[in-house]
Amino acid sequence: MPRAGLDEATVLQAAMEIADEQGLDALVLAKLAKKLGVRTPSLYNHIDGLMGLRKKLTVYGLESLSESLTQSAVGKSKEDAVRSLAEAFIHFARRHPGLYEAAERSPHWDGEEIQTASKKVLDPIIQVFQAFGIENEGLQVHLIRGFRSLVHGFASIEQQGGFGMPVEVDESFQVVIDTYLDGIKSTVEAHKKE
Image (cartoon, rainbow, N blue to C red; front, side, top):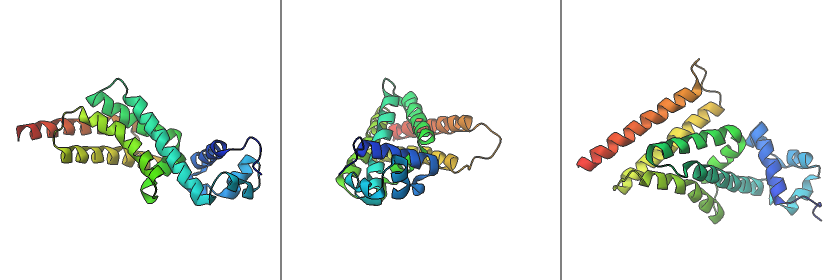
């Protein structure tokens, strides 16, 4: 019988806290049960084992990231919207490193729920890039992939402590985003001339 007050949302919240504080790989059922003050078998009333928990955490991470991205772009367009999306990615990864890691593992999972949540992350990015008036769909995909690679790469290197030079990391991030935006403008102009 499930413990009173313990539900899937509570389990996911506790799992997220463990992942954020100790890393996604530290998330095991025994540790989660201890945090919740229950015996490990009690968790099975709310989740389908460790793999089921990690899949749910991935969906939760994707949906949370999507919400952050969508909110960041509201009322903005083109360059301002791209900057806001980039900052939302970085801030999300900093606030929730374990949850961000779970969200980024989404390609490793199958299932409609994961696919739907992954699409929600892409939707605000696609909408922002459509504002640039890029008619070539292939080019738009290239630019979106470049953007995602840039922000994910930066977030991942930062999480691993890879930025050791004595220069402000946030300034580096702004320079990288500005350089990327300059590249978008010149690429879009070049394709308009073709």
